Length: 358
Ligand code: IPM
Ligand code: MG
Image (cartoon, rainbow, N blue to C red):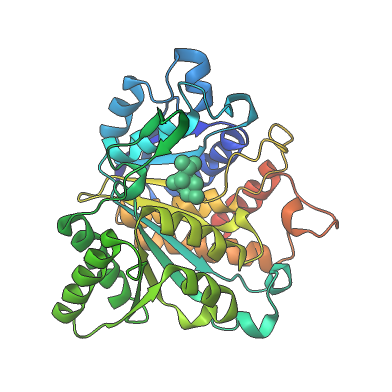
């Protein structure tokens, strides 16, 4: 298999974790006889510094011509002025829109041996294995009109939450497909008791549910879903939601595992091109220190192999090897509880060695 992979290291720890993950992809390529060619492009704060914009055209071209895109993280205190004309996050949002990546898939799985790292009690965690399917190119993030203006002498900000039935249907249908390969259960999140957008959401989700009667569908209001995520997380299988609710709930879901550093994500569209990134941010406090946990990005690369390159076996190798490395007691600083820990490169090296031995 020959594949073109575009790397978008971005800001903060982004370059370190993407570099580490590239070594893992190279190890997989040489083990399985693939040829991966990599090209690197700018996004986020570093793109603002070097070109004046968070998403240069050249980056979009580089992503469109690739088979898959691996992203580190964007953002940092340097570009954090909320009133700045350009912000690093616009790069990420613009990329999702430009590549029509309407679905964000975020699996939340516990790793054996890391139960103690979770803020939840072990008995609450038993059986937790869920996936967020978040709508990514619509809703309040993109709805028009949005802006800031003075109304009656008062500084006023406004955004629009809007979804049409096509947008709702395609994301809910995707959630059903995901559920069919897992636990056969979809929970659709809305706020239908208050928001008109979410009444339409529930109506369409119900229709899709009727057309897919083999899958169990329930509806839950976003506020009570937030509660259930920490009181009874194992009762979820696939959670489907709009853009903003999914943003919030998926961060909440991520802490169940005890480390944001371990969780991958995939942003997918109609075709096979996808953008893969760890769900954690750019961690400016530890950037450049060589201690960031690369496993979330490495596991994102596994999702990349599975979804964009159809390399299920190689994806599984990476996932198994990560569990094996954790089983052997190796930890980066975020998980070591102050005990001896490995740096980013060493952790990636441990994964590479385990791949070569697998
Ligand atoms: C995420 C992030 C982004 C979002 C930010 C960086 C724009 O929080 O991917 O969840 O809100 O979608
Ligand atoms: Mg988020």
